[in-house]
Image (cartoon, rainbow, N blue to C red; front, side):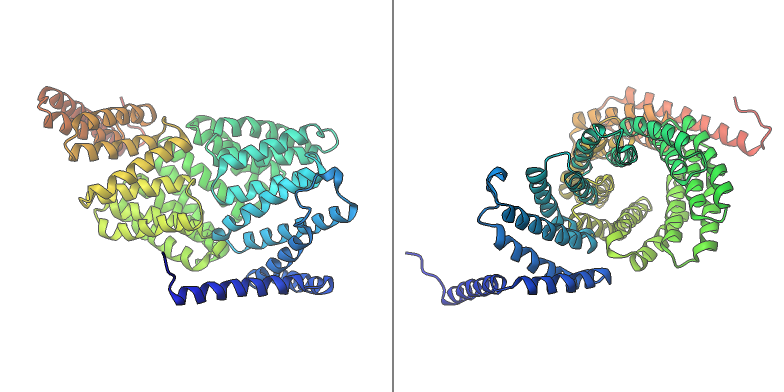
Length: 521
């Protein structure tokens, strides 16, 4: 027969006693005491002291739960008016507690989620789908899912909200267009840019006729439409929109305005993707200088400009120039950002870690990437696209350090997550496939390696052509793999292709260096 240790028995009894005491205290709260708690909690919340408000909101919620627990699941048609009033008070206490958790920052949204879910279910039961409070509960739950990086769940709720509001569109046109806007943003976050673009074109047309082209809302939509085209790789269509936004914003706000800085960043990214890197660099630097003039150097917006410029240099494989910018941005974000915006700091860790990795400083990169992975878990942001990059970079880091056993599960998880978020036809998926191919090659599994590397090469070619560094590197790995299998004729063919690509690149660089009048064949 199993016997229990006396200390465990004492601890168990003590815990039960404390729970009973807490229940008695809550049970003995009077309505007047609860009103006082509400006043105190609201005061703390208004002063932004949410950690002080939280235990009070918990007590209020527990008190109201005791008032309704006996009839909470009762059919609405059988409830007395006093019971409906009590459930309404309980709903309000859930909302206040959920909002308090949300205000406490990224890592508390997980605690807010079940509260928002319960409110939604209660309101739909009591009020029906079309009531404004029920619609509001869908909206609150959607925002919570977005904070958690669970964009598909948010999309589903926004689609429900859109369907409900579409029936009231004549009476609530502005509200309907607002939810269309939220849904477009959520599609973009979920990397469903075709869906987002369709809605943004509808919003843009509506705002142009109702607000005019110089209205801030129209300008913002124009920028988001350009972002969508750019994300879809349609940079030729994105560029004139970015140029239009830049011209209008400079006219409305002047060039010394943070909205103008955002325009410059979008335009620079587009020029970068179109291969006009000198224009892109000039715009990134201009954005940095304007931001420094407006905010000074001790501001999160300035840190973002440094991050953007560092990312540009990283994309150009100028890692020595990228590193100090990414490092400075990371250090500034660590100090400046409040907890609820700390996800930007996590992104800095990932970008800085991969920059160290490219410089072969994997021992420095590893702790940064591990910290980022831990923080993604802490914030429940595992569906965030940046988390997939973090897993991939961490797997590559272990691979370069020779810790192949640790690398494989991370690379597999990265591939699965990228496929889930973006699908299997994108640059990041190709990069993760390439890394997995390198792993299999190191382990002597050459058939598996060939399959992954060939697939990666085909995707790279579709997106960046043959002369991109990733494509060239992937071809070299393929040649090494064929060589290890004894198929030297295939290796020689690949080496010849690589040499031809590099010779063509050199010729283009020489022609570019001759000046603006040089002809490139």
